[in-house]
Every structure is written in structure tokens, then in C-alpha cells.
Image 1 (cartoon, rainbow, N blue to C red):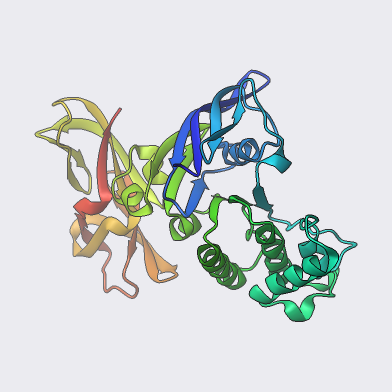
Image 2 (cartoon, rainbow, N blue to C red; image 1 turned 180 degrees about the horizontal axis):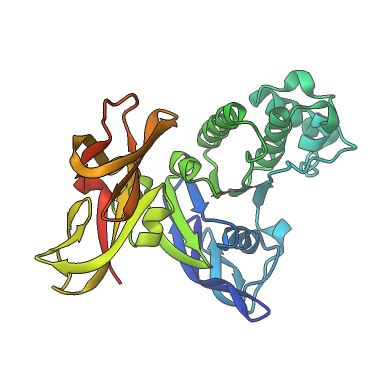
Length: 337
């Protein structure tokens, strides 16, 4: 049985669709990642799952139970859902221990305090049990928020860009810690992010949203290697595009032809090439306009026949002013217009 299932879910604001007929099933996924830019509908979808607002069409099921439909809205507190926000949303007047114990009212005082201490110990913060939120670092506050959420034993946890306010190193550390904790406790999660690298890292199932529509839902490797559309490919990293027509079973670009099996001869189409799927070597085909460090790669800007593309290549490559170009088939796609 699916932990989470969405069927034709739609939500409108002033007649405009924030979500348009989105269907998803997270049956085996430990973490369902929702990826998309601002305005894509991912946070709206999170609120609908949590029961914080109604949907206008479709239905949402948790563990097989309909919790939202056009005629039903189960209250958030009845859904057994936990939430972790970007700003951690700790109660400022409560200590770390008090925050974790807050949702454990079904327990007696002694059992509640013992459970709070045990969960803070699990996230490595037992020594901070008496600290108040303003005394905690950003990373510590998020770990307290995670402990508070998991202590209630939710059937699913919703994480709304929980690490976006942290520096890159702490963000990576806390992300890995959270994934490990979720796995150890067997807790399913929905993770919202606008960062493609983060989505690929955390997801067991990746859902790509744009303008309220679901572009693709797949395991990360499939989503990256076999994008369903040009927009889905672009959502997962830098790409180059070129519009043309199919001739001889391929689309010709200034940097080389890309095979297009199954597309009709003469049909208009668009090529999408990932920046890291371009190999450069000294030659004559294209002009190398610039070359600069870009983390573990060098970013090369190349031009041919008035078309400018970017390539991510091995650092410190020995190249002249002009280069030949090879497009790797694994990162080059053609989609009909």
C-alpha cells in the first residue's frame, strides 16, 4: 500500500492553477523529493498533503485513507504528519527539551521528559536539553526540530527547504544526518527543494514540477539519464539548447549532430545537451570564448555559427583558441516541438 498517493490533485487561487492535475504515488520511496523553482507548486502541494488548506479537485491518500478530496478535509492533527520548516519554528519560550516534549501529551510527565531526552540524545544534543532556541546555532535548532517531529512517530515527515538558510558545509552535514536519521527510524519523507543537486542527493523518488504541472516522476538516475522533456532535463542542471529539424534521423547543431530515433523526418525539434556531456580538444570547429574555474570542473564558453554553448570540462585542460567538439550521446537529447 502506498504511503502517499495523489490523484489528479488541483488547487486554484483566483482562477489560476497553482497545481494542475498532479498525480504521484510514493509506494516504496523513503524520500520523495519535490523539485522546482519558485511558483512551481511544490510548497502548495506540501500544504495540501499536510491538510493546511483544501484542494479543489482530485484526492490525496495516506496509507490508503482518503485525507483530502473536493468533499473531505481531514484535520492536520489527525493525519499523523510531521513538518520541519526552513526556519525550524521552535517555540522560543521553551527549552530544547520542552520543544521535543511538546507533542507527547499522551504520555505522563516523567515518560514525556525521558522521551525528549532520548530523542535529543539521538540527534547528538542531550547536553543542550535546557538551552533555549536563541542559544542554539542554526544547525542545532534544525536537529531539535527534527527530534521534535520524529518523537511523535509520524507516518510521514514533510521537510520544506529545511537547510536553505545554512552555509554549504553545514547544509551538507545536516542533510546527511537527517537522511540517516530518517532511514534508521524507518520514516518516510517528502522533501521540498529548488536545488537540483540537493534533490538528486536526497531523493529515492524525484518529482519535477513547473508552473503547477508535474513534468516527470522517476528515480533520480532515470530522471537524469532519460528526461521526459526539455524542461525536465533543464531542471536537473545546466543545459544547452538548439532548435532545428530532423534530417536523416538526427538533428544537426553547429557542434555536431544528435541522433533522434522515432522522430518524423522534417519535424521541428529541440536539442538539449548537458554541459558536462561536451568534450573539447584542440581543433577548428568552434571558438573558445572563455575558460574559468567552476568547482571540480572548468566552465568553457564555446561558439560556432553564431551559437554559444557552455561546457563543463576537466580542470586545467590544455586548449587553444579553437576547439573540436564531441557530444556524448548519454547527455544529448532531442524532443519534438
